[in-house]
Structures are given as structure tokens and as C-alpha cells.
Image (cartoon, rainbow, N blue to C red; front, top):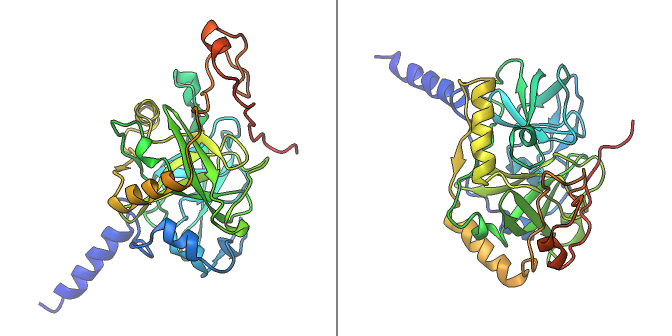
Length: 321
């Protein structure tokens, strides 16, 4: 019977770190609104970073989040939603054959190549999302991020919630969700926070992810398309999720993404945020089939002629090489 305890320990480690289960969260009881209000110190994810070797993750407050599932090796990040599928901004992709490098929590690099890329807008869903297929799956030490479960309210309950925002310089910030409409999510700066906790997104930030925290996990809600406080495709959209499942099945049917419901603390945070930061009077319009690359209608229909004029959308275009 002496072998029983070591065997059980080994079985637990295999389950915790194998391809079938995500790694254990560093701080499962963490709340974004509390951390946004109380975090001190640098917001950088890494103390040292290199693409072709080990990295040193910061042990300041950003260490509380497992962001191993984001490929930080280039400005146009790729975010893992299954062990073999990443999402990117469709206007700022990693092309076929290009490398993507993830680092696990110990700092070890895991390099893969993009084998295939599918843009959802080429399959009937107007959104700035591209799915990349990796040449082989990543191990369980690299986190795959779930998406928000589809809600009957279309995600309206998220308005006001604190979002964790990333950008090309590998730092973390906190914004408030101010608009969820169909395939689109927008954010606003939380003026109650110090400027060091807010970031105006610029060229090169496209595709970097934003998250909420629910049921102890980071949940992918958006990848940046628009600058300023940030806006982009809403990953809790039923249309986006349906098309993602279809594309993932075509690329490699052995995998699919997970979804997570909003927990009570997240809903309470959103309610608080709605009281302090009123939502936009109208949702930011989604690009349509007749739109140019910035989402501006090519021709005005009678409905859009009579509607109030919207501010011109700023797309975060990739920097010129």
C-alpha cells in the first residue's frame, strides 16, 4: 500500500498539468474591482522577456493572473482558446508559417507555428476576429481562456464591470465595460482610478485581449480593434461563438472552447459600475458588408441618414515596418 499515496499525487499532477485540464490558478479568490482600486507597484507582466528563451515573470500584482495563454512575442498577440486554436485581430494577424511563442508560469518558452488562418468575416460574421490553427497542441501548462456564456440579455449585465486590459508593452490596466451590443463590446476609462491604471490604446495594440474574472478564471471578452479606452468583438456573442465552433471543427475537431457564466461578484461589480459610469447613449455600430476598413458606411441608407451621427471609429492599424 506504500505506492498508493505517491500514485495519487502523480495522478493529480498529470490531471492538473496535462492537456486535458488547465493549470491551477494562482489566486482564485481575486476580484478585478478590488485589485484595480488597491494594486500598487509596476503593471508590467515581466521582469525580463526574450522570445527565444526563458522569461522572468513579475512577482508584483500582475503575477496574480495567469497570462501564459497569450503569445507576447510580437505586438500582434495571439490568445489561446483551445490547446491548438488562437484568436487574433483579423486586421492584424500572424500569417501562415509565422511563429507564436508562449511562456508557461515557470518562464519556459513553447514555440509553435501558425498552420492556417480563418477570418470570421469571410464566413458571414462581421467582426474583427481571426482564428489561427497551431501546428501542434500546447501543453496544459499554457492556459486556454474560456469565453463568456451566451446570455439572454445579450451581455447587457456586463455593462459597468471592470475589465483587465492588455497592450503591446506587456502591461496590465483596468477599464470599465460601457457598451455590449450584438458582436461588439466597448470600454471607457474609470476616472476613479489613477492614470497609471488606465491606458489609451494606440497603433500596435490591435488584437491584445481584455478579460473579466468570473468563477476564479480569466474570461476572454474582447480583442482590441478600436483605440482609446478600447473596443472590439464581444466573445460572448452567440453569432461569434457559433461561427467559432464551426471554424474550430473544420480546423481540428478534437478541440473546442469552454464558456463560463458570470458569477455574483462580477454582476455586483457591473451594477456598481453602471451607477458610477453611465453607458453610452447608443451602441457603437458594427461594420457591415458595405463598410470600408474603418467601419464607415460606403453609402447611407434612409435609416442611417435619420439616426444621430456617430463619432468616427478609430481602428488600431498595425505599425509600418
